[in-house]
Image (tube, rainbow, N blue to C red; front, side):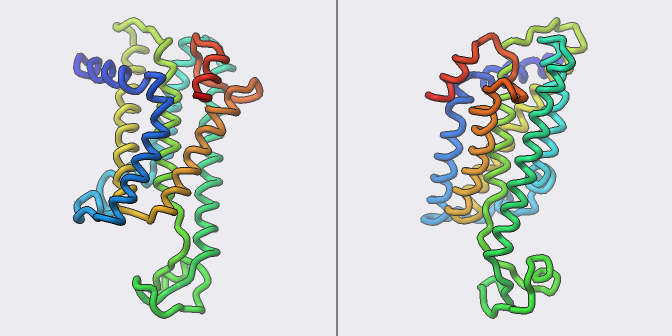
Length: 262
């Protein structure tokens, strides 16, 4: 338990700072651009992480939204109820996960449709010989063809959105004080460690995506939609009264608004 406490203390000190919430979006944008330039000008040699079948991609990134929801749901419920004692307010705050799910579903469906309507089926990865008879990606792959369209980076979108959402929700830890001998303390500490490591995985895999996959335009659009989903909620809508609201904090709404304006 002592090691868990130390790890939680480190992650709280690293991820809960207002500066992290303020600058992480810019760090992600800079990393995406730098990684994309490196990929185009001086590609890195192939490695385990450049293989789409690596463990982190298959068991984490492919189901990134599920991991994020499964850990944020108990975290939001426990921390918000501990601070407010109001079940109604907790349910209101948990609706952020429903909003996030709607954003995830809409964007992934949009990306899929864009790839479909801009794509064609080819006989080889070299984009030779268009197969006119195949009008969908699924049919093309089923018949051994290769579909090529404008494939907006879903990884860039989702990893950006998930990392920023977790960091926003962890801001509540500035207010949470629990008795170290209490079961609630153990539960929250465990969730802090899990969410902290999950955030590090999302950022790391975002960097791998920037360096190894997609072209610059596809990653720019993916990252843009991730930032739009985050800012449209935590930076704008959640500041309003008719919304799920921001995590409970002692700082005033005005200070929160000023944070996003800077």
